[in-house]
Every structure is written in C-alpha cells, then in structure tokens.
Image (cartoon, rainbow, N blue to C red):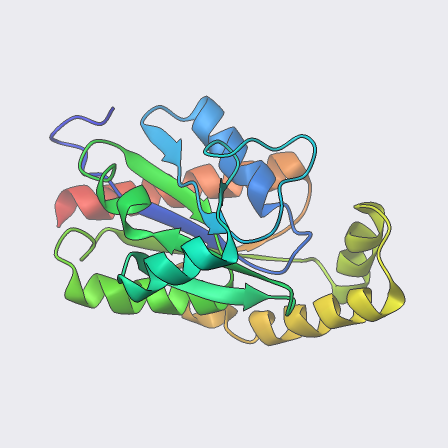
Length: 202
C-alpha cells in the first residue's frame, strides 16, 4: 500500500511484442512495494499455464460484447486480427485509490486511456506512460523467433506492427532503450522514482 504522501499512479508500459514488457511488469510487482498488476480481459482461450482472473479475465465473445455495450471498458482493441483485448474500468478504478498499478498494452490502448483520463477525475494526472523500444529491428526479430514457433507471415505482421508502434515513442513520458533485462529494470525503477516525485509535488 502507498501512504497518503505517496499518491498512487497507473504506470503503463507499451512497445512492440517481444521487448520484455510483461517481464518488467511482473518484476516491478514482485520487487517494488505498493504495486499491483492490472488484469486485462481477452477473448482468446487461456493457454495451459494461464488462470482466469490471475493472468487475464478470459471472456467469451458474447460477454465481451455485453460489457462493451455497457461501457465497462477503458480501452479495447483487436490484436493481430484474431482476438479482442481490453481493460475493464473496474480493474483500474476500483484499485487505484489504494495502490499503484502497472500494466502493458498496445499503443492504441494507451491513446484510449489517455483520452479516458481527461474525462475521469480518478485517472486525471495519475497516468504515467513508458515506451520500451528494441535495440534494433534485427534484435526484435530474434526475440520474436525465440518465443516459440511462429509462421513467416505472422512474424512479418508483428514486425510491421512494431514499426508503426515505434513511430509513437516520442509521445510517451519516458523511453527505455531495451538492453539486458537488468538494465531495462533499472531504467524502469529510475523513471518510476522520477514520476513519483512529480506526482508528490503536484
């Protein structure tokens, strides 16, 4: 938990698939006091090692549609033209008064949450965005290939998506040029400390 002198924040990591955003989020929750991970929703089926409510809120297409129509999402998007992902308002707004939150989403989701923060007092001034950029497209290709079997078409689609995402990196509060896992985490901690000082001073 954070103290009254330490305002809570929604820390968002974005960047191409394969740059280590999930690893950074998980480590921040483990090692930095006062953080929880935002559990996002998806229509894709759970993988064998995933648990509903812990890794994602796994929703059927019909349930996703129902919640979308009810205005329950802060943001949502189709990902790789296959499944929908989104952030439920309750996953953020119910927890943010009590603890800081960290999540990773795509650049479209970041734009949507920034827009929501202009309308929702509970989010205004609390959103901190960090872009994690690969060292090079060649390194990113190696990382994506190392994550498991992927078709050439899917690999090229993800690399094209990465190039579009990289074009937006200058619009973020902070930028991590990805190196080793340890270097990336030290950069994340440094940026969080800077952001926390700004939040406390505001």
